[in-house]
Length: 578
Image 1 (tube, rainbow, N blue to C red):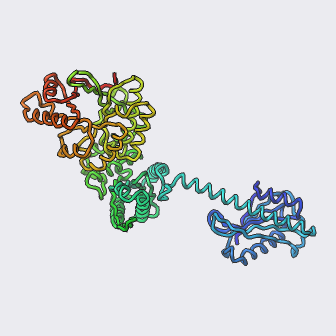
Image 2: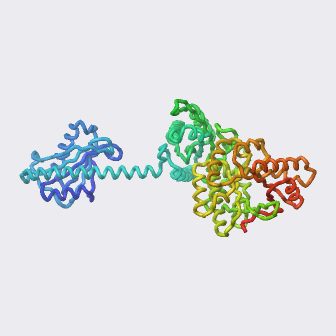
Image 3: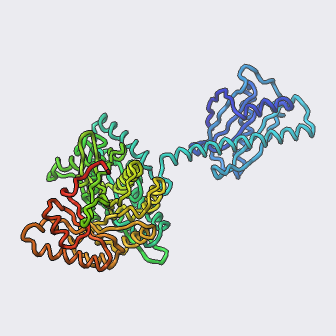
């Protein structure tokens, strides 16, 4: 047993002791319980300065009682703390053999064990039945005080844990991970060692959620988290960034060691399997992006963006692989990828996603009845077209947020200027299948008082060919609300007629390559455009010609039977709706 000097302190125990002294000859109270480090502590609370013989006698009696009590499971060595509530008041001498020590065992649910509360009484007063009731009351009050303190301490630790931990996997959460990455960057700079940042993304994880439900998906995420932790060293830091993406910081880890670690993660994930509710065994693969500090980047943000770019590269090259910068990589291209990531993130944070409107004209009466909404990022005097950032946004998983911000900005402008025409919006299929997309769009229209029938979502044929059935279900749900749909770039791919069979479509936008050649010797193009117009008319679908850039092309479009025209000759994109 080790004696640890205590300090005078204010506490509920002090109040209990002072109140008890009014009716009892109290010399000390004590508690025995497990501390925060799980090591038991015997704590004496003295009502004055104890003489050395009294302190020794009390310690011996209580320690022997603790060791003799089987339910306390006391180790042979535990800490002893002495706290004096009234340091300037000496305790009176007592007949040590008659020192009266009482105690009570109680359960501490917070630590799944038992504890002890007790009182030490002198022999100055004879005690009657009333005194026995008082002793019992003091012990109960002391027990409750200890219980409350433990519950509060446990609660505080849990709050701290949940502030830094992902509740599903118990890995660090994204906020804590960013702080740890910042810390590791500064420590690496000070101490001159290398460390590795690893980003891990599950391949095709959505299929597991769609096939077996989110409960099974959550179990799989926990499984992958365990596999990741087991593949890393004890000093490495693992985190769940968001959704199905994980991250890890590997201190003192160069490029060669990083490659070995990433390969180990890949192989361990491939080998892991889990039973589904229907008894099937499912396996999963991951894509990994790796970057090493300071070899590949000297700033925390650049390191993260580079690892993220490598992750996107691994996905692009077929998944179930790792990607890391090499001597053959074009450094300027990698920097450009990082710059585009920054551009997208800052544009979203600063609400710089701005709608531009291009008019769509009725070919027959030459009146403007609709506008296509185009996505732009506007920074100072620079207007950045969607072609420069949409692919990056999709790889980052930010396309849904861009669509939401674009729609909200558009609806605000429609409401403010009283626009009554239709609005055509390009919609990424990736955004369409997000669980929150349909409820969010519905709420935005309600908030701005816009009828769903004014909205026409454009789906690009090239984007949707891999998921016709899934996309079709979402289209049907929005059609039921009154939204309308168009197929953009119709005729450019190989699924044109399959689209017409699968989707309930209101408009076809004929691919611009057919339209722009109508003013030359493009007899084949004219025949194709005329056939599309004729078929659409029979199906009750309106047609729109894009890239109408001259009066001659407009005349050809009209003679082919196309209903609407769009292009620079009709009007260029503008931030003004009217």
